[in-house]
Length: 595
Image (cartoon, rainbow, N blue to C red; front, side, top):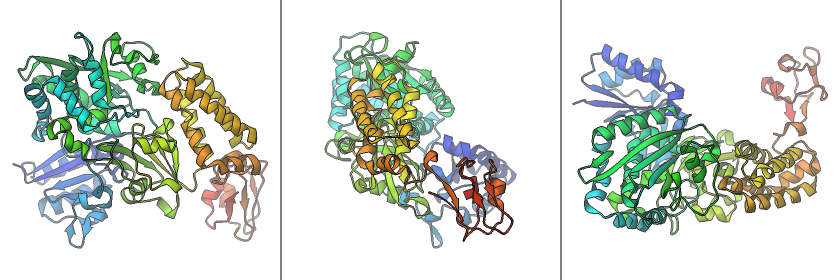
């Protein structure tokens, strides 16, 4: 029996910050101090506060150490683990209250969160099936197989109101019932773990921190629809997630929780991994299945829908990671428990990857209907450097930009669609006053053009023409007629593209045109970028009253565009200026500005 457990984040975010070195230093110091029988070091999944990594929590005290460095470890071990004196200077300061340590759940970041899909992330060792079982893992599968019919399982999921968390928001129980209604025979259960939205890392964190929850949920889905084979399509760029899934599948098979005759009930179900090569279009369900089959990942026309004719032309259920992460708790706690959270038409919670111009970058899970203001200002800690909130992008390249005027909107499926955005898989990128909304629309469209599979003309050609118009505007060469052309082209692409990638590609353009049209007009009419982002429209100028002639700017300029004598005001030659901003960064007197 260990007297203390040290949990260290082993997710991708903290790993990239050096958590492996923290673990190695911990184990070394614990051994040096003769504490190996008393202190247990556990590598967990993501805690959520990614901006503070590497993160470690010491229990039973609940001391939350953030931004830990290897050189801090000897002090933590000798003072805290050996002598029982918490090193308060290394704690996340919001958890320090006078001489006591405040629970992490009472901090601003966690207080309004409700963890369902992320329940075990940062709590258990994801590579140890016993820790998952110790927190009621696989009990839902046991309950489904021994106490419920397949029809009852589907009805519970229907009654819960769970909708697909991959972006479409289709009722999960209804999808399962369609597949279950097909004639008996070979059927499949698939998991979409090919999260490709820029800034999104929700599914990755669940796979890294709680892989067994996905395996259990897929087995439950297999029982519900009459399938005996599952596939997890996960991108190869997620090596930690892939490794932990492989370990989890092996452990589940060893314990009789995957494979033949699960729990002695006669139910057979097994799961295989398929690695994706990073094609965004393979997040679309029919393209994903085509890729699993070994073909180029391109979407197929619907109908027939996958529940009727999916993988290998057999009835197939496909949900994303977060959707599956909710299933075991719904089976264990009941439909009413899940339906009690959220809004009338959007039940439960939603995981968001909070990024961009925000203080608390990380992973959050909140009840549906939580306002954007609560997410940005309270959980996210507001905008850095005293800047003003300008917009939030939800749904990635398929979503839209929500302006500051709508910051009090409750975030759920229907509300976001009503204002020209969408939930998507859960990326939420925050933008401040220094963000150019025309440039943002161009950024997302560049991504879509690059990721289009090219199968249908509206997406292949239409998005390219749309990007050309945006590029023209950001270079100061646009006309007011171009705005009308863009809107017409957007609606044509939406109406005629084959799959969801093309149908939703114009959303960032349409939403920015709707809410930030004045910025487009400024680019076209005034030949100015109000946010000072679009290089072609910028001019760097030195204020002679502030310039001290220190020559730092001239030495930093890669184009020799700055001239002037020592201790005399300098000038910038606009013909030579590359508009890189190096001079502005070096100036200590605030004498250089862009306009």
